[in-house]
Length: 122
Image (tube, rainbow, N blue to C red; front, side, top):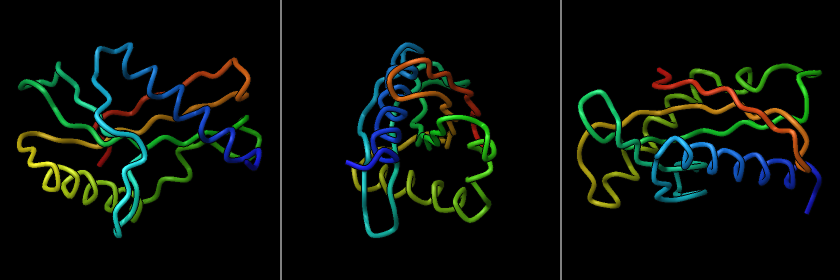
């Protein structure tokens, strides 16, 4: 596996642990369909009006030397993520509130990762 892929997998593992520690249930990882991929699909039990289905985009960088992970999420990517969480819900027969969150994970795959969490990115 390429170093970039190892880092990306470590970032997604870190993100899955992070949302689990928030009390969320990770329903699926790396869900793919012809329209794209969702890194994580999770259920946030403490949404404002009850449980919320969340598509989580994880962007991992070893450092901030070449920019912040948020810089890799543009308007087209956000639109695709919103469409993907709706497709996931339809495919799995899930109804109710949903949103897209983004996690920026920064640090080495071997340890020392930290994350920033943006909820309900539009």
